[in-house]
Structures are given as C-alpha cells and as structure tokens.
Length: 256
Image 1 (cartoon, rainbow, N blue to C red):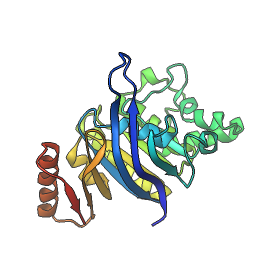
Image 2 (image 1 turned 180 degrees about the vertical axis):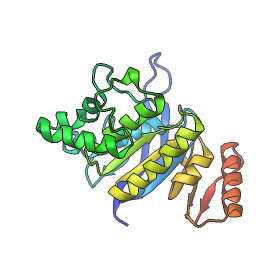
Image 3 (image 1 turned 30 degrees about the horizontal axis):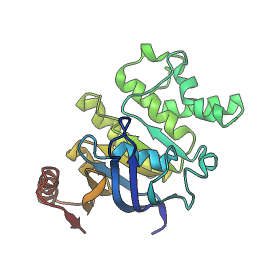
C-alpha cells in the first residue's frame, strides 16, 4: 500500500496559558492511509481529531514523531500542498458576499486559474451536485443542504488528491444528509481522492468508511477495523457494539 498520509509515533502537546503542565492532545499516534482510501475517524469531543487534521494540513507541527503527506512534511513544505488538499467543514463556510459559483471558484482563483476556466469548472461542479440554475444565488438564498453542496463542490473543484472532512453532514436533517453521503461517496470513487472523514455517528462511519479508526483521548487508536461493502447486518451490529464498548472505555483492539 502506498501511504498518502503517514503518522509515525506522533505526539503533540500544547503549552497552557497559566504556565501549568503542557496539555497532551496526541499520544504515540501511528497510522497510514493508502491512496484512494476512505478512512472514517470516530471519537468523543476533545479526543484530538481536529489536532490530527491540523497536522495533516500543515498548520502545526508534531512535538515528537513524524507526519508525512505524499512523502512530504506538510508543515515544512506547506506551499507545496497548495491545491492538493481540500477540506469540507461541518459548517459550509461560504463567503456571503460571493455567489455560489464564485464561492466554488475561490480555490481556483487563489491558484491563479484564468477566470473563464475557473467559472466553467465551478459551473460544472454545481450542476453535478444538482445546483444548476443556482450559480448566481447568494448563500442567504440557499437552504442548508444547498449551501453544503456548494461547499462540497468547492472542495472537489480543485481536483485535490486528499479530502479532509470534519462532520460535513451533522448539521443537516437526516434525509438531506443521507442523500449527500451517497453523492459524496460516489464522487470519491469517481475522482479517486484519498479521504479522512471525521464523524460522531457510528452508523455514518459504518456506511461511509472502508476502514474505521476509533480515537481515545489523548488521540491514539483505541480500535481499528476494516469495513466491507458486503458485510452482513450481524457483522455490522457486532462492530457497532464493539465501538460502543470502546467509546465507553471497556476495551480496545484491532479487527481485520
């Protein structure tokens, strides 16, 4: 397996403003994500998932250990990753003064793609995500689900090699969220992008992921298992029960 993302015995601590003992957000974390793989990450609030994202994005560097993304240190080689990593957040984070098409084209604009080309790409992604005819609508005129579709279109428009997703469907109603999950998974398969998907929903992780990591606090892998599309309901129920036990602090392990 070619590792697109590699953590080797990573620790991350933060100094406390009051001068107390440093806060450990990540402890001896090691894992690899293969090219084109979709890995779901579960964990309680405060278990270090966001810190892990920031390490992959190159926004911070580890205190100990090594993080490599496509063989590069994302903190040291930050500029090299421009356009290679896309992020979809829990909230759409659209710019309210830009239309849907201009929001989708933002990353392409920052990468200095000529305006006609970037607008063509943005329009094609909006149409692909069911927003044809809404190109010139502003965010306030769109529903929550529509805004999140714009956000997803923006992430895919730059053809990133890696997508980091931080609970992108948690603020949506179940019907809208399920429809977007299906579209998102289909888009990942079509584009071949590598993805890490953070979620608090066990069912969402079981439905989306090809592999599942459960983080304990501070961030370390408490449980890991591969997920097959053809798993039986009984197998999924067994994994669901195991995850609940791990999150309740009853044990840890790896299933293959």
